[in-house]
Amino acid sequence: MSRPVLMAIEKGILTKSMSVFDYGCGYGTDMDLLKDMGYLNVNRYDPYYFPDQELVPSSLVFLNYVISVIENLPERDHVLLDALSLASDFLIVALLHGKHNEQYMSKYHCKYMDGIINKTFGSFTKSFSQEEASSYIMAVSGYYPESIGQGIFLIDKSYEPILPPVNLYSEYTAQALYRLTKTLKKRINKLSRKWILPDGVTIQVYKKGNDNQHCYYRLVSRKKFLCHIGAPKMLKSKHLGRPSSTAYHEAVNALGRKIEIAVLLARISHIKSVIKFLLNKPKATKTMRCTIPGFIPDIL
Image (cartoon, rainbow, N blue to C red; front, side, top):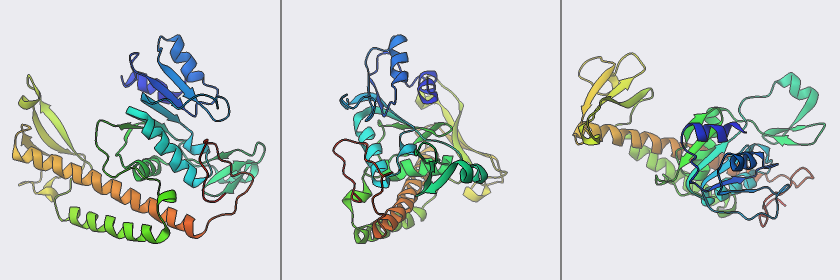
């Protein structure tokens, strides 16, 4: 069983009462194993191995390592947004993690677009760092994903997206993207005028009560001091009080602004890549294959 599915079970995200869909399942081993474990409402789709299966909306959708084997940039966004639209509660996205050794790559692989192609099998792979993967998912989906493992991210759809999910390749021209970038930068400047929770600072419960209203919270810093966020003394923690307190709400709002800025910056970075692609569209090659039914990328 793949690591993303195992982690979903271990963390209690996946339960037997949920409907599950594996988007781009390959041989479909994960769903077969889940059926053997008593998970009855499971479905799968793969353009090569199970092309006749329907795309079924489900509580939990897995998109395991699919993005990392798609060399067509517009199609990557299309697949992520398609999987997101099928998930009613949770989407788990897994991407290949790490970097390729240059010596190994020159011997067995060759560079192609933003990834590599195996010289023997002709297969494409794209590896992401943890930060790059998180930024990509934020930029396309508009959600702030939770990292639950190396290269594995969870989108909880009970939260509202910070930005609307959009395929920038198909819905915008280069000029429209330039204008959109200016709008997003103005939003960042407006948010930056207010208090932003610094890096390394978290909101923690330090005294639990009978219910949430009787819990007490504090700011805790992994760094040496909190003096740069307005603490009266050079402290490593700052008392916030109960959830009804003004200090707690200010801290939560500061965290929200920090997350929103992260998503905005991720989308701006992605917009730059899209503009570069639109202005320098590569010619179609045999390695550029469309794997999603009904999707015809602009470059073909």
